[in-house]
Length: 71
Image 1 (cartoon, rainbow, N blue to C red):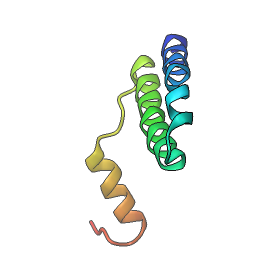
Image 2 (cartoon, rainbow, N blue to C red):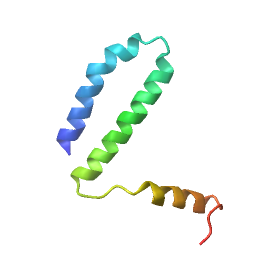
Image 3 (tube, rainbow, N blue to C red):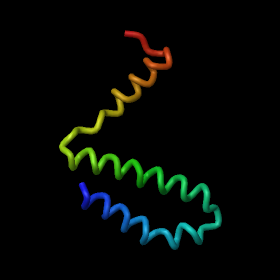
C-alpha cells in the first residue's frame, strides 16, 4: 500500500509544474486531482485485497437512497 501512495505522490510532483503553468488552472487541477484521487483509492483497495464495488451497485444504491429506486 505504501508503494502505491508513494507512486501517486511522485506522479503528482512530476506533473505539478505543468499544472501550475496552465492557463485554466482551476479546471485542470480539479479534473487532474479527481482522476488521481480515484486511482489512489482503487490502488489502495486492490492492494488490500478488497474488491472495489461495481459501478452498478454504487449507482443502484445511490438511486435507492434518494428515493428513485424501488425493490
